[in-house]
Image (cartoon, rainbow, N blue to C red; front, top):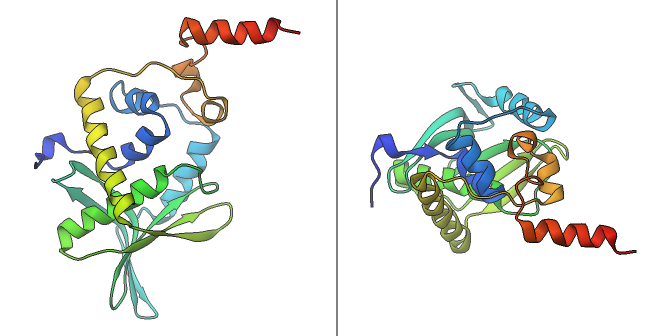
Length: 206
C-alpha cells in the first residue's frame, strides 16, 4: 500500500498514540493543544537542534532538522539529528526528561529510520535517544520486533484518524497527571459508570 501526500500523518503522532490513543485523537483529530511545563521544556530542547544546518566534526557529518517522509507508512516529519558516519546512518532524537517505561520514544525513532531507509535505500540498524535529565544517549537497536511494532502502530494510527472518533477516557493517574491535556480531556469525569462505582466503593470501605 502507498499513501498520497495528503494522507501523511505526523511522525510525532506515533508517540502520542502509544502514550494514549485519546490524547492522540484530541491533538490530531480535534486540534486540541495545551502547553504545560513538560511540553515547554521539550519544545525548548527541540528548538536547540531544530535548525536546517549541517556540520562535520571528527569525520562525522551532522544534519539537523532533516525532513522525513514515508509513502509506505504514510508518515511525515523531522529528525532532530542525522549522523552520517563513514559506514552508517545514525538518527538521534532529543527528548526532555528520562527514558519512559513504554516504547513510544523507540517507535518514533524507529519510524525515522524506516523513512530514511525508504529515501536513501540503506539499512539502518541502530539510532539513539538523547534524554535531557540524564544528559546522555540511550542506544536503540532497530530489531525485527521493534520494526513490526512501529509498522503496526502506524497502521493503527491511520485507522484511528480515518475513523474520526476520539476514544473514551481511561484514567491512569501517573500518565494523566503529566499530560498537558488533562483539563481538556477530564478523564475522571468521562470514566464509565463501572469504574466510578468501584472507586466510590473503595473510598467508603473502612
